[in-house]
Image (cartoon, rainbow, N blue to C red; front, side):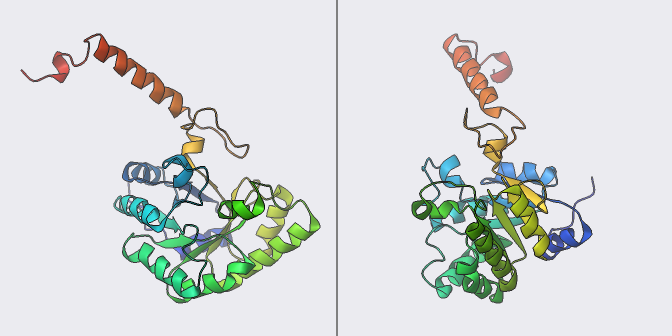
Length: 269
């Protein structure tokens, strides 16, 4: 197989112009990153969803820079062709533009990321611009903002009222004007996501926002069924690895308890 060229933010932007859809999935470790790259995934997002999927938090709010740098480094070591984007965690870009640039630089220098992602539209316009001006590509994120769950009071679909639609339009324009190369649209009513996609020159990457975005992203553990019965409406299950892993663990346990493992094949005489 011919190796893929390294995907860049510019290449992602070109996808919209050429009408080619963008594929994005999350990874937090070396093995998953390699597998995603073998599957020709365009954007490998080291998401702060690591907090709820691997670290056991109830939300993404407790995730720290230390957590995110640790997992970003693991993904970057896979030397993937896909664009590695690191999520900036809650509190890492809210105090000042200087703080945001400093932490974004850490993701590139220490973590090996190709770009960073942060939540917020108009309210984060100046911060996005500051990071872009520092030479670091930014993936925007509007709509449902998991880091704002304390303020929003839960995970709610956006774009259901006229006021929300107007705010989303301001947000997508702000993200574009600030210099972001693309923008995630999370849990936005499909017709509104379609409208936002048409009104901006940068690619939109949807999650729970319908099929008319310029690309799609899912949390990998969700689409693989690794979290048992938990299944957000926006997720399509492509495998049930949680069940398969449980079965394998049970078989191993029985084999050990019955003295069937290890056998001659797994032993050295």
